[in-house]
Image (cartoon, rainbow, N blue to C red; front, side, top):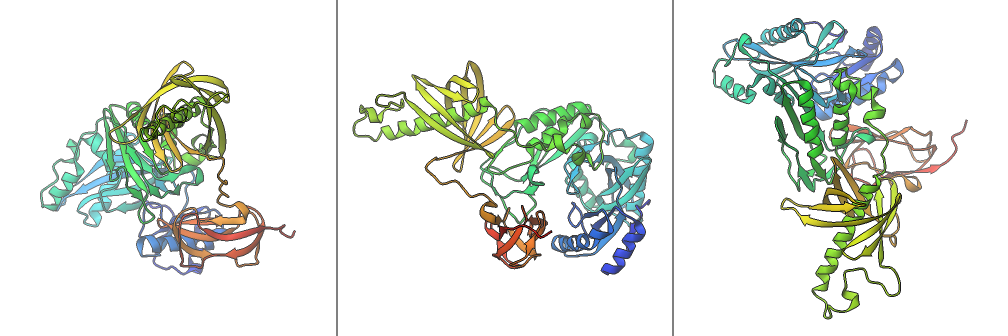
Length: 544
């Protein structure tokens, strides 16, 4: 098997590994020997960061796999990640069920998987497939397994073998029209493989994405919380693999993957469009997800052209991870209308209990003495706060939007599965949206995009924010695994102050500005909740 140049031995002394790294050359990759899924994997650009990255990789490896052994390999600069599905029975028969391209990754974890690999020639497919089968045969393997390769130019190199049926197996099932779980059961019962290599079909194309509870705009920081509403889009050729439903919680104890969404079609373009449609129709409220990020990947011209490698996300970062854009006026209008309709519903319900239902104070039309009837709705959309004025006009409203005043009418229809359907006319345009309650606000799903609004009470003091007043807060629940400063230390902006482990990944708490550490609230080993104050940083000029 061709291997990427590196060190794959048992010696783990830091000095020895540093010497091996110098021999291999930079950039290089440190990988957990017992691992996978990107945990315990670090890119080292130069010798100066080797020691710290080695220590971090070993900590993650120990936390994830109970084994801190690592290996070191040359880091290829523009590789594709291609893996081959193999299967062996107890009679020694072995086959490969073609390959999957898993090149689009974040934090060394796969984001998009597709089969077969775009642009793969029959000769290359046979070479990689046969190499994978022979590797499994050499160790007497039985059952489902995946042999992973990294390919660059005309070369391909063995990376590792996953001795299980992987997350990506549905795309292989789609193009071969085989049930691989059934294959596993048959092999476990001692039966021979149901097909030979020559009889395994290869039909159409399939694409899969991993839907995660994470914030792509915050370096894919995992999110925790309650999934208040979960609805997945469907359609021809669409398959949903999930283990969650509305009301379930995403905790710190497990990987935050919500679902695998798979689409199959007669060709790559059809499968991709079906997957985009399923994502646009999926609604998830309660936690931030990567749904919109996945849609941007699948819609990118480079993806359509199959220009794939492991640097895809970083190369197109500006397009895939754009700065937040304020909600457009029509969405602000819909959110304001939804809030007003909800308020009217509450007023109508309260009116039933009044002793004088004919009193003007019991009306639900916004009546005011000697002035126009209106309400101000203050919405927070991310960092932006907008106040919209809604004037009562008979059976509807006029809403003052940033672009001007528009008439608005609508109805809220409760849905059996939760939330409500908003059917509206805004400025003469017919619109619809799904509306869901959120703590102190609402979620709105409009034309494939989900917006979260907080309803601001102007009488209530504003939140100080995660780093206001010099307090640095925990981004999520976790465990303190490292503190690199002490009270009284003067630090520069960007310096790592503390390491928090959550979901078996390390998250660095960095100084947002230069200053002096005036307080540290926790010690190494302490468990912390989301949003608690970790350190206090007082502004101070760093001496030149």
